[in-house]
Image (cartoon, rainbow, N blue to C red):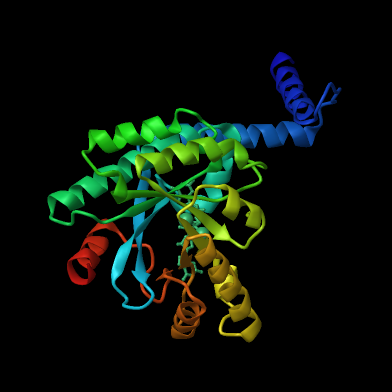
Length: 291
Ligand code: C2E
Ligand code: MG
Ligand code: MG
């Protein structure tokens, strides 16, 4: 019948488009099912955006030497009616595949700016909040302008917002995003390279992108204070010092991690030892007590 035939043809077309150059592809049952499930994921994400089902949690970052609060990282959650809270690991990759990361990313920046503005009204003037952005958002030449417009809308100085980027499989060459990062830095917004030391991030990126901060992935922090692990973290800190980058250790879960990271040269620490990602009122309490 026509409908399954069209679905199968559509699935085959998608498979063909994934291959470079011209290609012929035959539809298979599996392809059709896969396409149907990613279509359902896309519909759900669209509905979630429409109904504003996304919220941000805020995880503190503290100074390695004093424990003072330096700022927060905003981490998105999706509260799906009837299903519950969903982790970003389960929907960001899908949003990157279907392009919805662009409107979702805009919503996240708007929500973070609204929260920064709320905190400013309460007298916490200069709390920096770091927002994660997909490198796919950075490929959009309009991205820096959108960020600046949002800051202006909420009357926030650019020092209050910073961005964390992770190189993913979605963008093989970060040099395409370099221009946007440069522009953001010129506006006064700091950019950090996230999850450093894992899969896609390279030493070359540390040198070639106009970054301010590097965040060491928790997979490198976790095995500390094993001597080999300390050596690796220390080497990254030494390199960062030469490149004038600040270093944040992610996933600090124990006193041993914290001590070793500080001794290795990390400037800031983030992890469950200090706090899990917090709801807004808990984050506000942190601001009152430790800022
Ligand atoms: P990330 O940016 O590296 O964020 C750190 C992740 O580690 C967070 O997971 C955080 O909850 C978790 N974490 C923090 N401290 C500890 C610790 O001590 N131990 C352990 N085991 N985990 C810790 P989360 O919130 O599930 O986020 C996962 C990833 O999803 C983030 O990794 C980030 O890449 C992405 N993500 C989160 N929010 C956004 C967003 O708004 N936009 C985009 N594009 N990506 C986001
Ligand atoms: Mg991050
Ligand atoms: Mg990270």
